[in-house]
Image 1 (cartoon, rainbow, N blue to C red):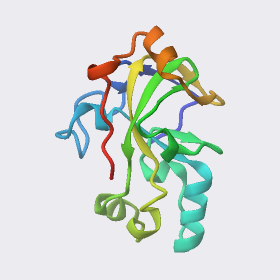
Image 2 (tube, rainbow, N blue to C red):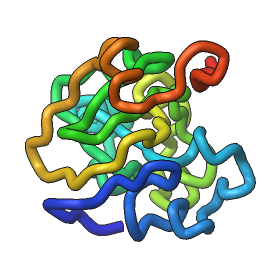
Image 3 (tube, rainbow, N blue to C red):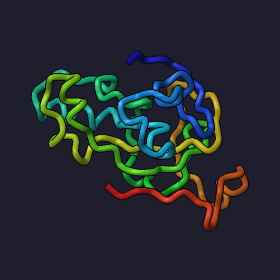
Image 4 (cartoon, helix red, strand yellow):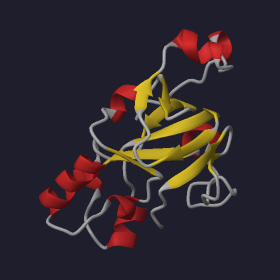
Length: 158
């Protein structure tokens, strides 16, 4: 994992160069929409670190994008934008035992409701530090070419 100030979100794939966008990754066998992009809030990571009593950075969580002050769970089942990219919140992203093995810290319980979300990328764009994350209306998503009606993505509730 490495922090980069800019990146390209690719429709149907995720973050350009990411292991999942390249067809690899621990959970690669699961549905594509569920693993294209992961987001986590910086303050939630800090709260988990304090609760568990470990050093934990947002990068340690292995999520793609770090947000500040965004109610990520509220975006599950909704269209939203990161900068000019169009995304759909697919599900919450609870941690797994794999993360505990990688970090050596007991994180699953503390991160259960603070693990961020998984999103699918429907409209790609270059993004950069400070990109605004905002909800997008159904009508705006449709105008931007997102599937609507019966073709609309279906979020998973976990």
